[in-house]
Image 1 (cartoon, rainbow, N blue to C red):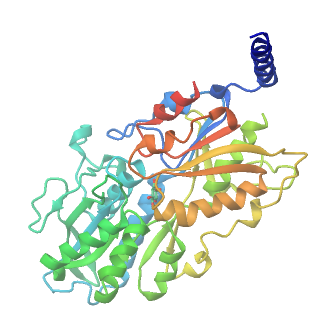
Image 2: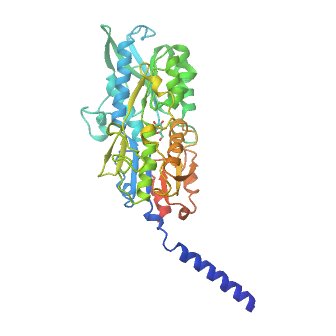
Image 3: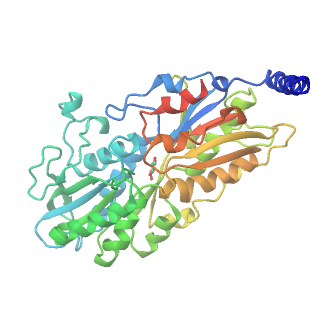
Length: 420
Ligand code: BGC
C-alpha cells in the first residue's frame, strides 16, 4: 500500500511538473487565428462576423477582392462576346442564351460572381430582399438561382440586350443552379458536369455561352460538353488545368492570385506569432527581402481583412499563368531560423475535393510554409460538416497558431469555441 502511495505521489509530482513546464505557454485563446478563403460572415446577408474577425488581437482574414474580381469576370465575358460574334447565336433565334453554374449560394465569392456576370450581361434585377430598387453597383443585384428560365419570365433576372457587329441580340439566362451534391458539398464540379448534360439534353442548341463561378465547375462543363460543341465557357480561379485549356478553346478565367493569398495567410500568421509589425514582409520588406507590391493587395484595418487583387486570364496572356502553383520570386526568400524560429500551425482546407483549394492554393501554401519556417499540419475536410474538421482539433495546445477555412461562413464559433 505504501509503495502504491509513493508511486501515486511520484506520478502526481511528474504531472504537476509537467503543468509548471507549460505554465508560460500562450493560452489557446490568445494564439493567432487566420481565417482564409471563406470570410466569417452571414451567409444570407453577407454581413461580416466581427466577433470572429476580432476573436483576439491576433485574428485576421485573408481573401481576395470578390467584387473587383466579379466585375472583371463580367467584363471579360462581354469583351469576348463583342469580339467573337460570328456563329455565336448557334440556333439563330436572336437570343444569346447562357447557363450559369453557381458555387455556393451562401458564399460571398460566389454571390459576387453571379452578380458580376448578370450586371455585365444586362440580365441583372435589383435585389428586392435587400430593399434595392435600382442597380448602381454589383452589390445591388439579385443573386438568386433561376432554375430554368427558357421563356425569360423568371423574376430573379431579366432579358438583357447586346449589340455585336451591328446586330442586336437578346441575352437570356436560360438556367442557373447551385452546384451542390447529395451529401451537401458545394462548388461541386461533378454536379456541374451532370447539370450541363441535363440542360443540353433538353435545350442544348439554345445554349450559346457557359458562365461558371469557378474553374472546377467550368472545366467539368467544358470537358463534358462545351469543348465538343464549341460553346464559349468562362470560369474563375486560373487553376493550371483551366489555363492550359485556353489553348483548346476554354475562353477565360480570373486569377485571384493564389500565390499572394497563400503567402499572406502564412505571413500574417508568422508576424502574429513573432509579435512583429503585421505589415512585415507585406508592405515593408522583411529581413530576407520579401515584400508584396502595392498593386497586388490591400488591407482593411477596421475589419482586419487582407484582400488580394484579381487579373483576367484570356487567350492574349494565358501563357504566363500556366503554372498556378509556382511561388512568386518577389516573396520567396527563405527566412533564417534565427529570425523566425520554427512554429507549429494547424491549418484546414474545408473540402478535400475542391479544385481551387487543393490544386492551386494548397501547393502555394506548401511553397511558403517552408520559406516562413512554419511546420504546418494540413487537415482536409469533407466539404459538408464543420465537425468533420473540428473533431481533428482535439488538442489545440499542441499548436502555436490556427489557419481556418470553414465549410460555412456562419460557423466561425465552431472553431473559436475549441480555443476557449
Ligand atoms: C474559389 C472557388 C472555391 C471556393 C472555396 C473560391 O474563392 O474561387 O473555386 O471553390 O473559394 O471556398
